[in-house]
Length: 105
Image (cartoon, rainbow, N blue to C red; front, top):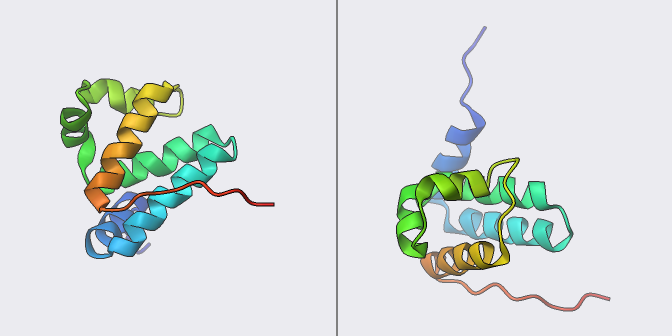
């Protein structure tokens, strides 16, 4: 049986070389959160964080313990609004983008 690359490695490699892919991951995470799909949004954010900044550096930026952030974005985690928006703010700044919510009818 042939060995295949893991999903995590594939996402990491693509994120490191494609800024548009990184921004798309952030947008997908926020879209999922706004749609009430908390677990999907956390999962996409976790993938983004692991593929880019890492939890240690992110924790330094938001003034939190990295293990607490990892738990926050785990399947069982329940991020507070304060933590979630602090993380999203730092990630947007790091990418040099500003995500906006618009009314869709």
